[in-house]
Image (cartoon, rainbow, N blue to C red):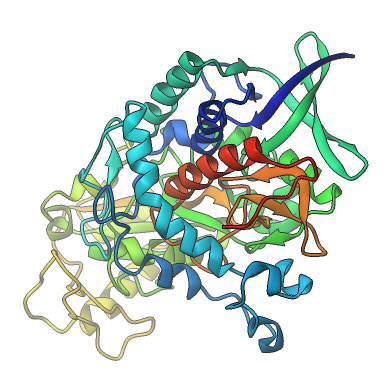
Length: 487
């Protein structure tokens, strides 16, 4: 087995890994970046996403960012532990430092460093703007990189190479090298054999949505009725998480959930999202409604609705729109699939094509229509036009499904990324189960746990960049014992 030495080894070339590699190289470190994919497909999920970021401007996070992260339901943690959360890191009990809950220092650092990170990315060739989203109603502000995630991967990869970062594609990290309790490198499998790379390690290789065994382990039977939202997610096999757990890492985030997005299962396009069900109804494969389709702005509710879809038979539902629903201004913006809808001039004809009981579907729609109150329909905002005496209710945009021709799209849950991951502090150090930093090991991006009950939209790429940048800098200044002060 050959051996190579570097100051910093980064595993993964999505936004977190690229940010870490550039940051470490800027600080003077020799940097190796490893990725299991070919060069043409490297970048993980980042390559395929539009990369919306929860920002009011390049310099300021969106209003309520920190509250949304801290208020995510984390179960019922012991108040005897959480009482110490306001203490500085070194004053907290070790048990609390290792506890799987949101770290307030981490969230504060995220909010403080997000703007400077975007300015830093601008300095490396990126540009950002308030670009149109697929959401026709929204609850927060967003920016996006010009060119989306693909531009992030291509621009930052090119910049990293210009700075002298060494890239090794088709190199899969199999294990951490640990010497006297310190992470001293990795062992990678390549096309020509195994190579040991020594150096401080930054793990940025995503979650486990591309690993069917881990999905079944943590998500049970529901693992079979979802798939990665884009091709890049299939490269995320979870080895980084497993290696760190084997080294004693603590966990954070909810291992029983993932970020769910509603997509057309017929489509092979990345993020073939369908975000228009607020203007129609959702029925299961038996023709029955099962959820309030319009609890609020779709950008705040689509994930929870998608989980309700996943819970149905075969893990899918049909979105049904009548002619008025199909005529909503810019409706195609919210329907990203390239596949055409199933159509019918009557509900019975549509039901036949959907292989749904025509009588059941007709009865469902008749009951729904009778509960619609009439009144002005305002598609630009939650309008409070709610059904009367109907279960489940529809809280907004409740108007009858009555004008043919009718259209239907199938929807399933796609797995954008998994919630469960490694516990890190505000310096991106991986924390062990005794509340201590694991010397020589840092992590950033989707493999670090942050979300518990609901994804705080448009934060994944943003935090990958923010904490990737922090991880690269911190890995470079690490002392011999692997300890740096938490920010």
